[in-house]
Length: 605
Image (cartoon, rainbow, N blue to C red; front, side):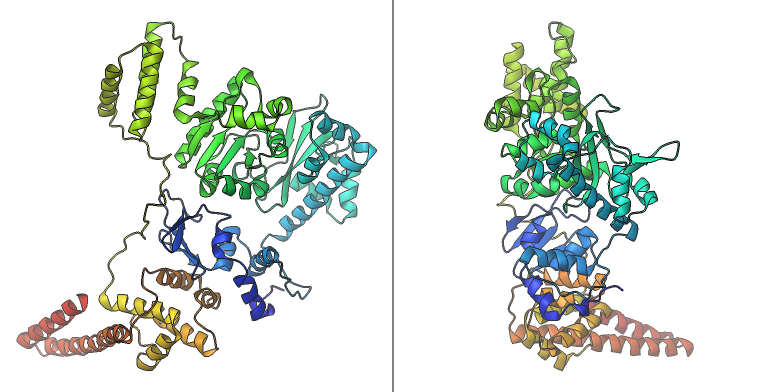
């Protein structure tokens, strides 16, 4: 039985909705900047580099002028998380500390039954692995491993770190006793089936890192060998719930710190994240054993502009940093790269020198993207050779030709001039030659595309006929003021020319007749048609003043009435034209046709 909206009392829905400011909720998914009365950011529902996604606190709604999606806080969660109505209400109620009534028989989840069971099994397994590590003799060697790595008990608990005992069937029997089917566990990758048909724990003898999605649900596990056994790291296989290129380790815990710091630190490994988090550096995430994907970069960009890449200092780490930086810049991020000398890794540095030294000596001393590139390119050249030296300078100048800031270009030209004892004027001349040769335009991908001084306007749309604009303005003011709705109902009723407008005003009349006061977010809740919701949110976001005079309203109403009257006249004239043509009266037909054209021109303007 799927829960219906009516099964949650209307007053509870209202209490939950009003207890959750849409700016705060959307702000957990999108980096918002206030512009005037509204907030703007990059739309999470379609790819864009210029913000067209708007949130209004006054009306408690959102709308994207790019893709058209819109609605209230409940709609937003349903859209972005693929939640059912009840799931969205459950999350919002939880945020506000409000209890929802239950019938004990709701289908609350948007997950398939199979995926829901896999999540439940993963949660049981997370608790079991953690319990074994912290409180049992079987988990002692795993506990000692973390102790040797200076990981404290509190941190072990925060990350729910665990240990899988080196036994064949303990985990399988545990989950079967909890009612989970063995074949489902095999399919989920929680256990492994051997050639002889026996089933064993996939991670036996390893310390366990639960991998959570951004909502904090365990969707997979990472297991690290602490003895010489197979690969050093072993992850759950990819599935519908777990896709390495779409998740970041620790994102669920880090996202509020990322927003607070307006910066994210990107690592390669679990232990780097855990060590940094324990040291008080909490805006930290890591990839999951693969190169940073375009999807991961875009996810970070929605939350933050500035990313510090902090990979291992060895050649492999620097190569990975180069690729990650390119992906992040393509997504629109401003990138810095932390430099760890002597091939060390973040976890080891923090363990040896502490979190404060890591902040001061590594993170705050991070190279700009251009400085990193200059150091990265040097490894490919023997700079004691003239030819290599010139090729290196040429390569750096080509990168500089794409830099937007003239100040930044000047700085690096001076660096090149000092490093290679070359004339600054010659370098500038060569840079201009490169820009002309390749047609390079300065790179704007890393610039913050909207600042407190930038006014972001909705994208220009095709001009609408005057009557259609009038209908939209009437609907806008009907949603703001119930007296407007009453007057429009008396004078126009549902006699709007645009069919969607007719439907919307009919809903509005019913909304007010039910005793509701003007509340756009609540009105949206009463609409079931997603297309209409988008249109309503678009109209509600119109840059109109909130009050309208009776005289101005009368003008809009007369415009719609005139349109209706003219449409009727045109229809009548078309019928007369048809008769004139049938009677072979070309003069009369031409007169009628001219009359129709004049009315149409008048309507157009």
